[in-house]
Length: 87
Image (cartoon, rainbow, N blue to C red; front, side, top):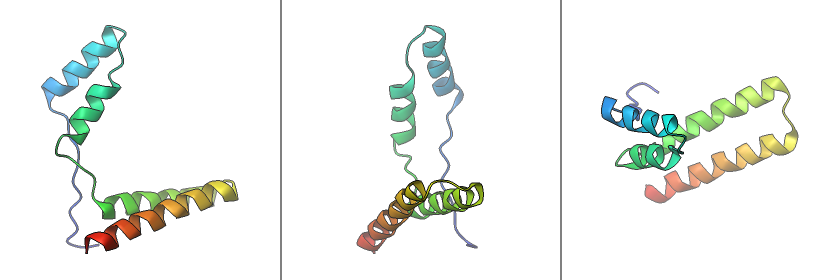
């Protein structure tokens, strides 16, 4: 994994304040948070795959239900297929 750069979604102070103000007013900040995170900042397929594989390891260690593990494995397969489409 050397040389792999993962893109991080970082909120600036203004964005954080806007979301916190919505919470203070009893409003849902979800749409604003999603807009900020999706505004030109997308997670790469490789980062998503790495996260899903880490989740699989965790689920295996904790004895999660086979059906749940199978669902996450399917997500890994879907991510790999998307990666192959782009290449």
